[in-house]
Length: 155
Image (cartoon, rainbow, N blue to C red; front, side):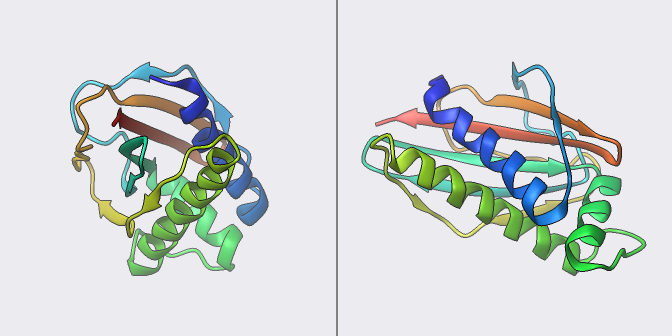
């Protein structure tokens, strides 16, 4: 797993949430994910393909953190995950991937992004369509946890 390819997604997530939602996430210890059960309540997932690689990235939020981000970004806090929250998670997924795409473009990597898919519910599944391993990076904040998963195959 190429750290040069993974780190732009991690730094982009931190930057997007700090800038758009005044939310600071604290990185945990990365690991290789086994299985496909998401470690949170709402996930945005996006596929990417380019000349050098194909893969996918997902961001999963605890419900409390997603609702906190919603309140910080849009000034409203729903009682539970709803359509507006899932739209926000999809947009965050898009912004994080776009930020990583810019950083990777500076290093010579190019790829096209698919439209994000958002999945909700306790114990939902995320299926990365890659042969390679999936890196799992946990983050914490006072409002809850987030996890980013990145999986890529070299072409």
